[in-house]
Amino acid sequence: DAKTTQPTSMDCAEGRAANLPCNHSTISGNEYVYWYRQIHSQGPQYIIHGLKNNETNEMASLIITEDRKSSTLILPHATLRDTAVYYCIVREWGGATNKLIFGTGTLLAVQP
Amino acid sequence: NAGVTQTPKFQVLKTGQSMTLQCAQDMNHEYMSWYRQDPGMGLRLIHYSVGAGITDQGEVPNGYNVSRSTTEDFPLRLLSAAPSQTSVYFCASSYSRLAEKLFFGSGTQLSVL
Image (cartoon, rainbow over all chains, first blue to last red):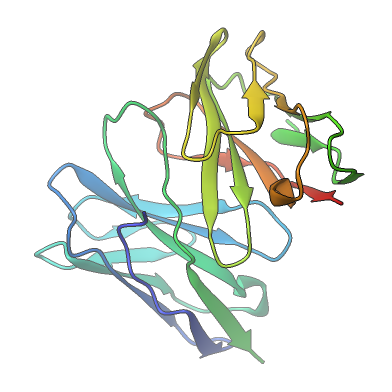
C-alpha cells in the first residue's frame, strides 16, 4: 500500500504557484520522498526527490518539513501544460528493487 | 535516443487469447519493470528485472510472464488473457535498481473481451 496521503484534486490559476501537499507520517530515516507526474495518456515523468533538505531543479521545488512527516511540491509558475496527476511516493534507498509504490495522486487542474 | 518504446499502443483481445506486450529501451539501462494502471488504483508493479537473465515478481504477477534475454528488451506475456487484465500497461527502466529516476514508456491500452 502507498505510504502517502494526498488530496484528490486541486485547482491553480495559470501563472500562479501550485503547492501540492503530501503527508507521509510513517516515513523512516532511510526513505526518500519522490514526486512524479502523469499527463493524460502518457507515462509518469520524474519531477524531483529529496531526503530531508529542500530541493530545487528546473521543474519544481520540494519542501520537506523538519520532522519529515510531510512535504510540499511547488511549481513556481503553473502553466496549462502542468495539468496532470501528481504522485508523491516514499521509497527506501538501497532497497532490493527500484520499486515505486504509486498511490492515486493529486489531479492538478491549471485554469486559464 | 528513443527512450522507452512500447508496442502496440492499443490492443483488443478475446478471453483466452495470448499476446506479448513489447518493451525496448536504448539507454543501456540495467533495470526494467512493468506496471499496470487501473482507474482509482494508481500504478501497480507486475514484474521487474535487474539485468539480463534476472527477473522477479512485483505486487501483481499472476497471469503474466516475463523474460530478459537482452539488456534492451523486456517483453510481458499474457498466456491466457482474462477480462481482469483489461488495463493500461507501462514499461519503465532505470540505469540500475538504485537509480534515482524511472523512465516510462507511453503505455499500451489493453482490452480483454
